[in-house]
Structure formats: structure tokens, C-alpha cells
Amino acid sequence: MLSRIRNFHLTPSQYLVIASVALASLVLIVMTGSAVRLTGSGLGCPDWPKCYGGTVPPADVNAIIEYGNRLLTGFVGLAVIAASVLAWRRRPFRWHLAALGALLPLGVVGQAALGAAVVASHLAPELVMLHFILSMLLLDAAFALVWLSRYETNARRRSTDRLGVWAARCLIPLGQLTILLGTMSTAAGPHAGEHEGNIVRRFDFKGGETLQWLVERHSALAVVFGLAAVGVLLILRRGGGDRRATRPLLALIGLLALQGAVGAIQWSLELPAAIVWVHVALATFTWLAVLWTVATAGLLEPRRRRAAERTAASGSPPAAAREPEAAGVG
Image (cartoon, rainbow, N blue to C red):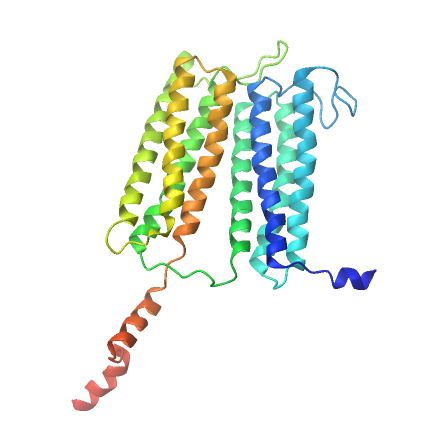
């Protein structure tokens, strides 16, 4: 038995499936978590980890939604533990996969603890935001695990398009700020998670104008984000640009356009929960598209290596090799 365990190994393709399941489960938990909030089910189970003191929720829609989300968290835990442990059995072994895999169960444990704090605080908006942000960080780690599992070390060529790669990377802070303002808007809006008369505190630092103030800034930043994505596309498609990231960038631009349409519809209809949920779901996929774009743009070729390759191509020795000759002439 012990020999079987010692000899148990995974191929790169087998481990890629496990890492992909972990990523999909984390995306799913973001979707169900937002459904919990938007349906007012955040306090559907007022205690944690049980629901009204039992292991089976009562026949109440909000309690079932909330408890179902908790059960899904259990599946997510198993998926990320598998991705973490089995990274050590992948052959060839790669230490950075093991390191990324170790982050996932730690993040899920942190999410569970934070979820308990959210319930205990009666959905304090700051903690709810932190809960969502931690979900995004977990998606970052899971996406990186999947992406790096697809390719062996140095299997992808490095890019020499410094402008294009850095332009793509600049989409990350823009996307983060856009999502942050969107999360704050939700925490100030009508879907703060109230349930059966429980009053949930909302962001109100601008009084009755807080929601509109946040939505206006979120919308303006989303427009800047979209224009920046189009600008990056033009940079990548210029003469001499590295066009590898064109496809994910087009997907990102399409998602941002769809986000704008859904945002306008939800505002004109006074924020119905179902459309707000679609907006949150699209935001999640938009963020994944940002990660996909940056990953596809690739790593940059070191400047020294590029200089050495140019020198070798021209047939002239590097400056350091010519200096002794110059000194000898003197």
C-alpha cells in the first residue's frame, strides 16, 4: 500500500484537469456567493456553521440558498486540497506549482473564517467587500496554477514587445479598481442582504447620494478601462507588435461592452436582483479575461539576452570584448 502511494504520480495533462476543476469550483463559489447576497439570503442561516442549530436547513428558500453555498464551499475545499497535495505528485515536479497550490487551501480556510465573521457582523459592508476581494485573489492563484500547468518551463517563447507586454499588464490595476468600485456600489445599493426584517448597514458616506456617487465613478472608470483595452489592442497590432494576446483581448473588450449594456439596463430598471447578479457574473469572467490577456502576452525577453542575440547576428564582438583591443592600440 505504501509503495503504491510512493509510486503514484500524475502526468502534466492529468494534473491540468485537477487544477482546472479547482479554478471552476472557485468561479462557481463566487457566483453562488453573489446569489446569496442578492437574494437577501446572507442571514438565511443566522448561525454558523450550522443552520438554525441543525445540519439540515429549514424549508425556507433563503436558508436553503445560504446553506447550499456553504456546502459548495466544502466541495471547493476538496478541489483545492486535491490541487495542492497532488502538485507534489506531478511529474516532472515543479516547485512553483506546489507553492501556488498551497495558497489555495489557505485562501479557502481564510474565506470560511471571513464568512463566519460576515454572518456574525450582520453583513458589515467592509467585511463583505473583503470576502469578495479574497475570492478574486483566489481566482488569481487558481488561474496562475492552471496556466503554468499547461506549459513546461520555458516552453513558450518570451516576448520582445516591451511596450505591448507592459500595456497589457497595466490593465490589471484598472480592472482591480473597477471591480472595487463595483463592489462598493453593491454594498451601497438595495441588495445589501437584508433578511426578514434584519437591517443591514450600507455604505452611506455621502448620505442619500452615496449609491449614485459610487455608480457614477464606477461607470466612468469602466469606460476608461474599456478604452484602455482598445488602446492595448492597437498597440499589439501595430507594426512589430506581438499579437499573441489579441484573442483574449478581443474577448475582454466584448465582455466590457456587454458589461456596459447590462449596467445601463440594471440602472434604468432600478437594480433588479437578477440583472445585478448577471453583472457580477460578467465581472468575474471579465477579470479572468484580464488574467488571460496578461498571461498570453507572456514574459519579456531579458535585455541582455536580446543584446547578445543581436550581436551574434551581426557578427561583431560585444563592446566588452573590444575594449582590450582598443587599449592595446593606445
